Length: 273
Image 1 (tube, rainbow, N blue to C red):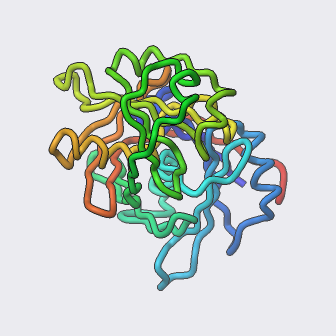
Image 2: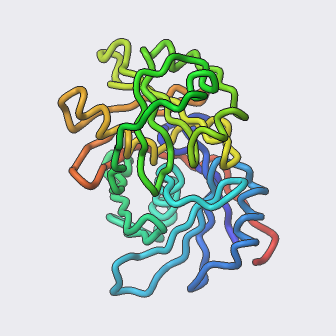
Image 3: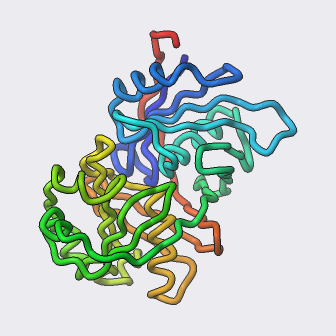
């Protein structure tokens, strides 16, 4: 069984967010225990597993994502990585449809090498600022929004880009703040720099202290910043150490996420499910 490591939301190796990708040749998924063991062994923020579906249905592939600690409902960068592998191996061309825990997702290859994902827009609900949040994050909090059931994060607005870049959160304290994690964000200091907003994402509850570039978070960042900036097409910079750009297009209940990907490792998994 071939296993690949793909850097997503970047056009160069060793940037963006790495994901493990395994394309299965079975008509179903192996046992959850085996899937989790592989993801724990790969030890990236997510490992994606996909198997083909019979023709004529609503989707072409079934897709699941696992962190080193648990399965998640939605993952953007590992979906982008899977679509990249399907395209580069010839297993999927044009638009590929996935069925996942969060519904039907599509990935469409562009002529310029990019891939555009179609994901559900996260419903945002303003909530009170948790008393422990500012201390855990290490910064003053301006507003907080719940991001709905599939993500389960808190979208946290802070003062400015400098604050986002300078965050040094207490990851243990963040575990108790939300169901999954915290998305910290602010407007770009200089929109002429090529991006409209910045973010960083912390998910210690699911075994990821900081995620390098989080596609799913941008299904919440897109409506948040589109409402504030008055535009539906935006570009977000996730300002982690690896960094990456996500182009977002808000389409009502759906959000398009566009980025590039690069395969950096390809090998053989020697353990059978």
